[in-house]
Image 1 (cartoon, rainbow, N blue to C red):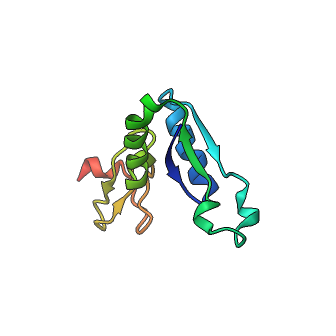
Image 2 (tube, rainbow, N blue to C red):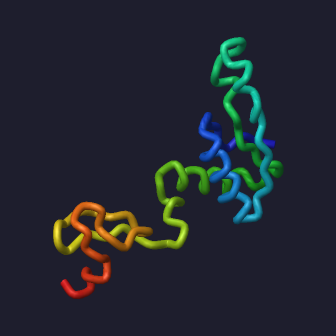
Length: 111
């Protein structure tokens, strides 16, 4: 069993576990409830950790975690960021309307 990710953010722990599970990598969370004793021990020892159960999954799991930490894994449906044709703002791929000026992504095809 090897640690591949640690965070105080429970949502990040859940996302990483789901990303790994989607690839067939079995995991376990250690120190999940250790925050109650933070202060008694150093915080980094009480941090929840995602561990892979099979050592042979370690390299693949580390690559998935690296993509998550870099932001690549956030585009779940594979949509790439796009540039608004009206104001030039860069918009994340999951959004279809520019947050700055309200232009729809479909308008990008016309420009």
